[in-house]
Every structure is written in C-alpha cells, then in structure tokens.
Length: 261
Image 1 (tube, one colour):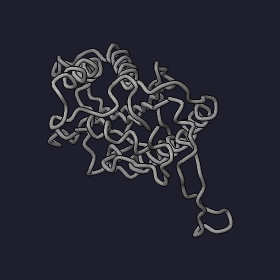
Image 2 (cartoon, helix red, strand yellow):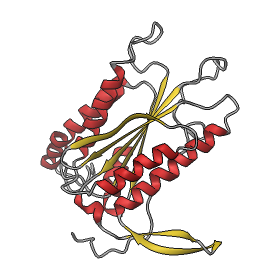
Image 3 (cartoon, one colour):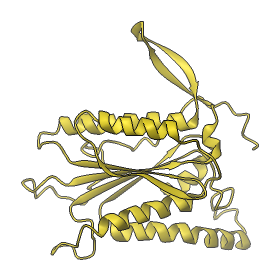
C-alpha cells in the first residue's frame, strides 16, 4: 500500500527470456549436440499468470504504432492484465519466427496457460502452436477479455497448478529405456511465471540472512516449504526445465529475484 502512488512506466521483463531455438536459450544446456540426426524435441511452454485483483490496476504505459505512420508511436496506459498478454503475444511471435528460421525444420511447440490468485485454474492445456499462430492468438484474446482478475496473490497455488499440469502430461509419457527417472521423454519445458506483487502466502519481504532474526528465519522456512515442495515435484517430473520470472510491477521484484536465484 505504501507504493501505490508510484508511477509505473515500463513492464519489467526478465532479460534472459528467449525463443527455445536461439543460441542464448537455456532450454537444453545439457545436450552436446551429438544427436543432430535425431527427431526434433517437442517444447512445452507454460504461462503461469497472476490473477489477483491488483492486476486490474491501469498503471502500465506502452507504445503503440499510429495507423497514419509506421514511424509514429503514441504512449497509452493499460492494465497490468493487458501488459501480461502483450508480453505473451511478443513471446509467441518470437517462437514462431525462430521456428520458421530453423534449418532443421519447424519445432513442435505446445502451449499451456494457468491463472492463479488464492486458487489456480488451467485455461489452456498443451495446445499446439500452428502456422502463424492466429488460432492460438484468438484463444488468448478470449481468455484476456472473458476473465477479470480478483483475489490475492498466492505463489504456491501457481506452482501447484504447474505441478499438476506436468504430472498429468507425464502420465501420458512413459519413461524411456534410457531415461527411467523422467517421464518427460524428449520434451523441453519452459515455464514463465508472470506476477505483479508480493505473495500473500509468504512474508512481505523475502528472506535476508543478514537482517532476519532466528524467529523470522523459522517463519520463512515454514511458509516456503509448501512452495519448495511444488518446485521439487516439478523438477522430479521434468528433466529439461527452464523457469523464468517476469515482474509486471516493482512491488513483486524482490520476491521474484529471490526465487530466481
């Protein structure tokens, strides 16, 4: 509440986000490229979006091209909810461009989307991204228009929903003879966690070893255990995971930075 008067002029997006096929991507860092003749792995992109009431705030500015001239742009305000879907559209456009420029052929890509506040809902589950992506964009426009954010911000709910999504998918991907520990056979996963504020299910500020008292450290530990369990569960199922945190408002940056590290 102390920061509500702050002017928000940019969407703070994690700079490490890149298309799965780009040279800077961390999606398949363990590969040595020895199997260049093998089948292209499928990529599963998962968007976990903050659906709390603060996402309705109209305090993000964005530039849009003027219809009269492609070189002219105007600045307009939008809600944080709008900004998230702008981000998703840009990300998917990069995937489509990267795939079309891939000399080894188009990479199969599926998309899931879940929203979380005090609970979690899965709105898209493993939808294929085809052609120019217009069918996917139509579904995303409907989700954007038909859902109005409300409630609090529960980080654990978002990761719990993601874990269930991966568990369901893993049930349809039996372990291979070469990888008995991971049910996600030959599939890369990139998860984007988009959020604007502090978690309601954790403390206001993330742990700080230099200033936290013994009592505060214990409180942090108790509250973080549930979230850590969900993250561990995801890692147990997904062998090749790239997790990115996208901050839509400065208020959420300390916690997202903590989780990212």
